[in-house]
Structures are given as C-alpha cells and as structure tokens.
Length: 180
Image (cartoon, rainbow, N blue to C red):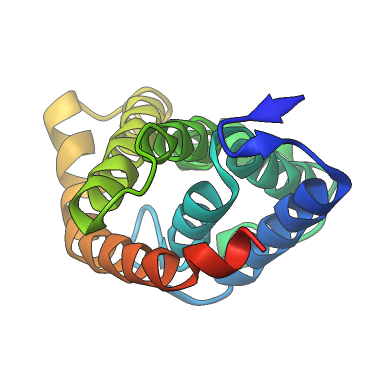
C-alpha cells in the first residue's frame, strides 16, 4: 500500500495505532456541552492527518473507532460500543475517518505546504466531520436541520479554529523531523 507520503510501512502502521490511542486519550479531556462534548479528539485527528497523510491518518481514526466498538471506553464521557456510533453523536465519530483522509490528502497535494494550506486542509476535513455529524444528529435526534446546525456546529467552531491553528503550528514545526 502507498500513501501520498510514501509506502505504508510497519513504522507507519505503528504511528497510526499511536494516533488512534492518542485520539482515545483526547476523549477524556473535554467540556460537557450537550449534545456533543467538546474534546481534544479532533486535535489528535488533525495531527494524525497532517503528520501521517490521508491513508494512515484515516487508519489511525479507524483504530480509534474499533477500540470503542469492541467495548473499550474510549469515546467521550467514557462511553463505548456500537450503540454510541448509531446514536445522535455517532456521526461525528464516524466522520473522523473521512475527515482525516481528506485533510491528509489535501495537505499532500503541496510539496511543502504553508500555514494557510495546512489550515485550509484541516478545515476541509472538519467540514466533512461536521457534515456527517449534523446529518446523524438531525436524523437520530429528530431535529430540524437549522436546529442541528445550531447545536451541532456553532458551539464548536471557536474551539476547532484554535485546534486547527495549534495542529497546523505543531505540524509545521515537526514535519522535517518526521521524514528522518
């Protein structure tokens, strides 16, 4: 297998597993804002996408979801199980995989992306995550689209902007070391 960053190796898969575990840790650092808690999970998603690339970034988030599906309490609030993924907030979690893939692939389009491109790429991934999250929140939560957008995106925009800026800055600082 290959990713935009090169061949997928055992080292890459190990890094993907590590980022899956870090995303799980991020679920325990949260602000309880109903119906979707604000966590540091997306910070680790952004770091995975930017440092690992699209394919491995997506695999890292798949690892995270699988940990929760098998019953480890890795979802926000210490929740676990398939029921979380089919509940009102499950669309956000399911959106982690395509969000990481999209962001990682966009970043890889440039040989040496700058701050604006990396931030744009992460924002595009976030838009995907919001899309899957809001749709499931509206359907399962029986909310109108306007209400789902209001409660499912607006409270999280400021935090996500800060997390995107932080992840972009971290990536730009470490990217040369990652190639070694």
